[in-house]
Length: 389
Ligand SMILES: [Zn+2]
Ligand SMILES: [Zn+2]
Image (cartoon, rainbow, N blue to C red; front, side, top):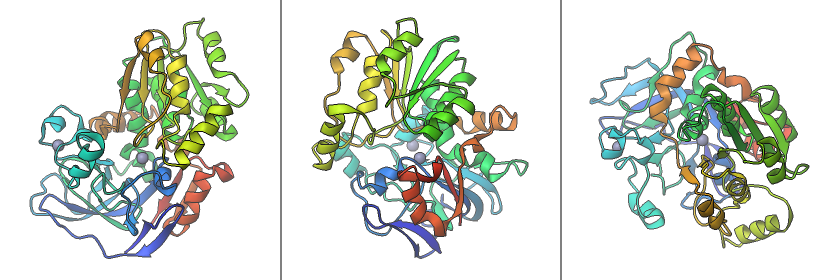
């Protein structure tokens, strides 16, 4: 089969690779009908996630048709059309039983690597380094899905692939960022980053009762999408002094909920931006936490800061004193996608949201290597790439 494979920094190639096979009785093989490039795939593309190996198959946002099931699979049949969540979860451990699927104890065969890096291992993730299990990803014609009874959700034929694909990651990820903040009706939410997760966070904030959402970015087409498609008030951090502007827009109090949907490759301004870029290049910090610092400073006293943006290792100069003095609550982490599949599919079926609104590029796997660059460089007004095999 053909798959998009990682060969190093800025080196993604379409390769012929062996077809996946059933390895465990709970596996299923999915024939991919639609897949996407995620913003977090760009951290792999830019070489910031360790333990990638030459030839690793990329991709954790995908859906398709079940073409083979292992002997122990009970919930799926050949021919079912499914969307697959990006974290892999066993369904039976302590964390799966508490709906914290991204913390599954049993789905990372390389747990020892993650334990060394993080103390304890999170769940395995499709196509996201050996630290996260070394699983082949879904930017391919076929993919092996472990614990197939637990993850994939069947989707009705009345909905198109584009309607449901983003249940695999970015819709639940944006939604969870607001859900875990327990926002009060009528409150103000600020969102750093108007990429796909930020856009879904804005939409979700309104769904969950926010009165006002303020979105921050510097890419004109993303700010336009945040304003016109998602209904946010927008700030461009290259023009507006963000902290002052947010104070002014919230009667001096600051936003009660701040969502950092940027992660480890944030762009900033001024001296601190040079500092972060130099230290990250020298591998003296693994992330550039510009947006995170700003969100901590902006957040209202007693507020909640949620981090769906991906961080991998160590960051510098975090204003922990500001967070402490204002009594902030921090929430962060990978998305417990499984928890949100049914409720969010129901919202799509009820037409409360059309998740395809942010797709700007409809391509094929052949276009993949070029699409990574276009998306990373935000050329051609690229916000979200989907690809058919
Ligand atoms: Zn993703
Ligand atoms: Zn588990």
